[in-house]
Length: 458
Ligand code: TYD
Ligand code: MG
Image (cartoon, rainbow, N blue to C red; front, side, top):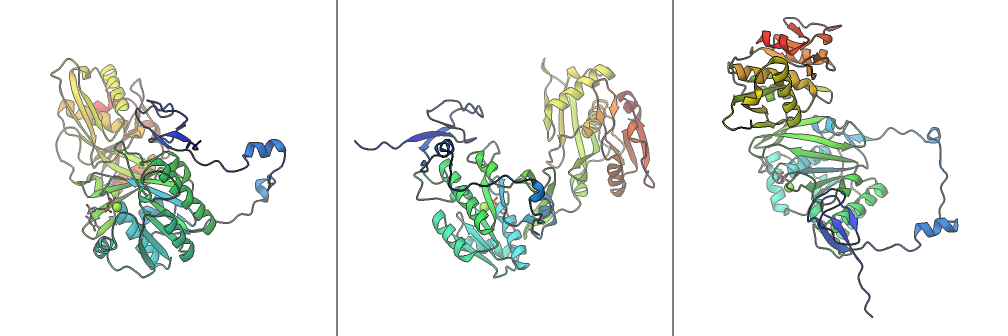
C-alpha cells in the first residue's frame, strides 16, 4: 500500500494549526484562511517518551540568575540615529529584525542605506535579494551614493544556497529581501506559502544563533497590514519594525511593535527624497508644516512618542447632519475615544453634538492615541462648531474625564518646553500639572480644570 502523506491545515493569517479544514480560524476568527500543507516531519524519539523513560541525551541543570555571567550586548549603529533609536540604541549583534511594510514604501531602500552605512564603518555585509536583479540594485545604489566593497550582493531564492553562502562567507550582517521569496526544496510547498516562510525563518534563526550573524528580514504585508504569513514569524524574531506612511506623501514612519532589546513606543520619521531616505530630526516642525492659519477647527496639541514630545495638529470639521444619524469619522486617532469626547461635550457643555456630523483628523498621517490629546480634540471640535479660530500660537493638552474634568498628564514639563522651542507662546494645560512646573521664558500658561473653562479661552 502506498504511504499516505500526512497533511495538516494552517491558518494563513495567524499560523494556527489544525488536523482538519475549518471555515473560520478558531484562533484569529478570520474566514477562509485555512490552507493545507504537508505535516512537519516528526523527529525520532519523541520528547515525551524520553521524559517518561526518565533519561535524555543531554541534561542541563537549572541555574540561578546570579550565576549567569553578565556581558553587555554588542550593538552597532546603522548610521541612522532614527533607526538606531527605534531599535533601542543600535542593532544588537546576532539578533534578527523583521521589517514589514507596504510595497514601494522604501523597505529595500532603507536597508540598503543602513547596510551601506554599516559596511562603511567596517562591518562585512551581504545583501541577499530574491526580488530584484543585480542591475536593479545597482540602479538604486547609484541614487543613494558611494557603496563600499564591504557590502556585497547576491541574488538568490534557494534557501540552501543562501545558508551555504552565509556559512562560508561568515559576514557580520545579512539582509534578506524578502523572506517570502526564500524557497527550500526540502519542504513540499510552493514559494511564499506559510510552510516555506516558517521553514526559511527557522533555518535562518538557527544560523543566526550558531554563527552570530545579524539578520534583517524584509516581510511583505497583507492587505490588513500584518506581515504576510503566519504570526509565528513575528514570535520567532527579536524585533518587528513596520515602515508606514502614505505612498504618495514623502514622509515615512518607522515603528517598532516588538523589541526584545528596547522599548516599543519609539518612532522614527524619514523623508523619501530623490537620493534615498533621509531622517527628519525635528518631527514637530515637519508635522506642523502647512498648518492653516485663522480657520476654525485647527488646534495644536502635544503627544509623547516614547521619550520624545511631538507637536501635532488636530483638525476637526463639525457640520449639521443631513441624515437622522450623525456621521463620525476619525483619522489617526481612536474612534471610540473621539465618540466618548463628543458625548462628554454634549452632556457637560450642552452642545447638541448629536445633530452634527464630526470628522477628526491628525494632520501629517501620524497615528496617536494618547489620552493627553483629549483636550486638543475637544478644543478643535468646539472651535469648528463655533467657527472661531483658536490662537495660532497656542498649544492645548490634557486628559478629559467623563464628568468633564481635565486630568493631569505625564511629563508636562517636556511638552511645555517643546512648545516653547517651536515658538508657541500660550499653553493650555491641566491645572494639576501646574505644580513644580518651570515656566519657559515668554510662555503664558493657562491652567484649566474643567471643560467649561476651556470654552472661555476660545
Ligand atoms: P523600495 O525601497 O523599492 O520599496 P519596497 O522595498 O518597500 O517595496 O522603494 C521604492 C520607492 O521609493 C519607489 O517608488 C521609488 C522611491 N525612491 C525614491 O523616491 N528615491 C530614491 O532614492 C529611491 C531609491 C527610491
Ligand atoms: Mg523591495
